[in-house]
Image (cartoon, rainbow, N blue to C red; front, side, top):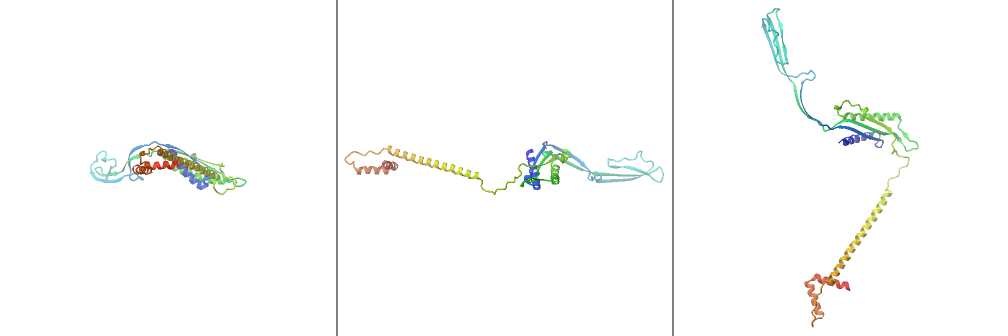
Length: 291
């Protein structure tokens, strides 16, 4: 997972910076520190509805106004809750025996929030990005041309802006303040693969492709010859077996009597052809082979 995160950030940076200075003119390397600690917690919160004045929502208001004659109770009358406004007494008519009581009770409702929080399976704790930029602008002539100091500063400023944004949005805010300058490094240097002054050759089929094709043709030809020989040997072997079977086959004996002539012999062959056609065919093939 750590490698996947680094490859993803590297790919995005390579694409963005490549559009700025050219894909072949920038190389990006990314290292990360990942925290894989997973946390489950439950929070029970009470918050005021009016955050600006830190007040709740009034759900009930009770106001009491009373007038007393004589001396008031010692210490006055206290409210019944924490949100009650303390009772106040006001002397009237300048005498000691008549008093007025004013009391107001307000019941406020607050936001009660229940949260069940499952933290993500990983957090990016730290991120380091190294960028190398090719400082060669043209190597086609006799003299190599490099970026000027002013151009390098302009390119560095644009790259820093992109890197700062990536780092600020990638590193989890729970790990303190992030200073992008401490997590990035930009180097201008001459790349080894800078194109030389040799004129470009028009694209064509390379010579090694012709050689590979000739080798493949020879291999296919050899395989075809070997396959043909194997089939020929198998055919000859089958023919030899057929002839041997025909030769070894027993021919019915013809009775030696006064009828042992061509007619009797022909009748024997006809009977053999009718009863055992396969043996008759093998016999014919053996005779043809002997001729």
